[in-house]
Image 1 (cartoon, helix red, strand yellow):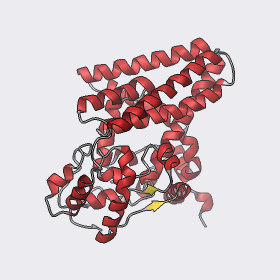
Image 2: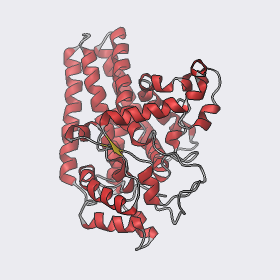
Image 3: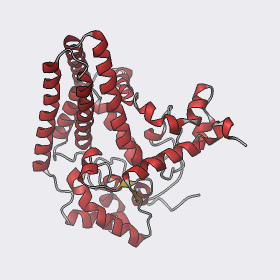
Length: 360
């Protein structure tokens, strides 16, 4: 069933601030909302905030590695691994903001910040991620269009579940129970996916060469530091803990945003405003949730205005929610733990037909 007619698609390049206001015309719902948000100054850059944010983050990341070197051969290094897992995720959030051009006006400056934080500091391909994330923002939760619901590991729709065979069928049947353990592999998957994307494209542009060089520098520096400071067994344990928890942290930050929200069919048409709002979920919480989730807890506002600086998202929430209420658009906001309950319930339901032991 089609929910509404599609007037225009302002999300073809969702990293641009409110391009939708220009494409949908002065009278569209999104244009009205966009004008109000812009008039409130919520799309203005926040250089002071990001200067402090980046400086403090870099200092904490450097402090973590300094403690690692000073501590030396010790199993207490596993606590350092936990700290660095958190800092890798926080560094990734800054790369995310740069990819959305939230930090600086210049694309070149944002890309420089993104590549330093992504490729060099945590070993994730900024170029691969931005290409993938652009497609997600253009078509969130839309079958065959959103790469984030095209995973082979997790089935997000019953149609996807029906295609699973062998061990994949069993995994899908119990995917709700296996979801958090599977996230332990997410960090490794992101590293490999970025490298495969770089190697899979023929020819070498300057940008790809820079991406590859920075990824290589990270891998060389990371492995050299770990195996120089720690004996082999401790080194492997350190990497498993650090990269495993890094993946869990990232996965837990992204999972509540859209999982368990309405999934749109491949040919389903919906205007930009409604497509972004009904497929997204906000998470309630104070400053701690804002920090822990990197501002992604304001997912509705972020999808409507991808280039809005992170500290402005919470200020945009009330006007966006009020506007949606006036337009009769469902605005979904839940508590932190309730969001994961909804995600797991959805995964459990999708995999239900593949649990023969539960069939009566």
